[in-house]
Length: 518
Image (cartoon, rainbow, N blue to C red):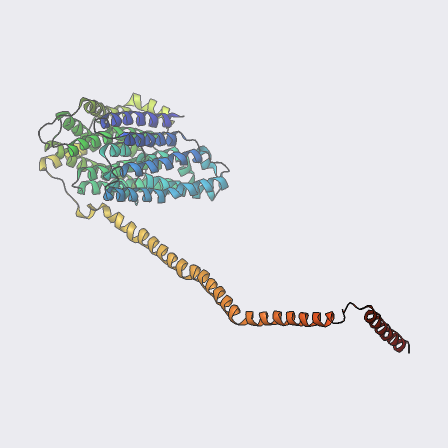
């Protein structure tokens, strides 16, 4: 247990308690709560694991529970297909972690996480490659982002937990945990930084294009986790962790509020206010949480081109958050919401507003010492002011215009699922069908051909060879009977005949001896 694990565990516990308290009044059965608790337990194992073996155990159980929770309403075939897509996509990426474990045994002679950065070349690069692929897949970063869209088929409490404190943030956590490994390779930290920045930018455009509220929030999760992945690549572990914690409060709040709207004809005014606070925090409006944490991440980016992409993604986040805020302004009249649901929503709203304190000068220093991130950069005042002003202006423009731009090219999640289907799924299925035909026609055909040849040989032997063999056996038997009949003739039972036979035999022997001597 270290500072990073402790922070993740506390975040998980708080969000889990809020989500379960909200879910208690939604009528879910015991199966739901068992799956949710196993889901959270697997995340707890993941963030406290000190080696790849234990990490893989938590990683796998978390993936299995996500499949069961996304397809919770298993009677609905569409939800089950969505669960299949999410599960198979993340499982395909998870193979990278298995490969990394194998390379670690060969190159580092250990599965301990703190030993991976010291592995021998080229094993260290192979370990880093496996970890990066697995982490990007788990955290729905490009090109794996589309599975998170399918995950919206699950109940709203599942989305709230999945997007905030479990699974989707696990990849970002792993990259921050293994930042020394990324730095040791050189190329991995650059790749991770660009993957996070491009995901934040492009999935921000996807969020802006969505008309469905849950799809907007799902795409915004990919984009916000992109900032955490960027922090892992840039080495800003303190800022990335602060952004993770603040985002957990914001996103769980937004999904639970969305659940109220989707299951009722109206919403309680507290829900509207809470969602509004969460949307403004998501936009990075000062002094709310994500304003400071996002700028802490950007402060550690040294590449100007990378910083420009990340800053554009920050502005986009204000635009899609403003679009979500319009949902509050268009909310219908209030309807009853249980007190057990209002309390966690109010608590999460307070956290979404107040966690910006992690960036205050006195608090930030202690926070970094807790995480061991003493090398983090502090954003300057002008950066904070500029990002805050841009966030306010962007949100204000969207709200006053009563609509946000909707880039059509981004509506279908950048066609990522279609590309994966065309480039991976169909070729794999075609190969599987070809192998199946080869198995049926060649392998099984050869086995069936041998069987047919055996039957044909047996039939041939039965018709032709067996007759001759039986004839030879019969001839031998007849010859034996004839010889036996000849041998029986001298056996008359008369003694004088036996003497005569003996005399004849003796005479023959004497003649043979004489002839031989002569």
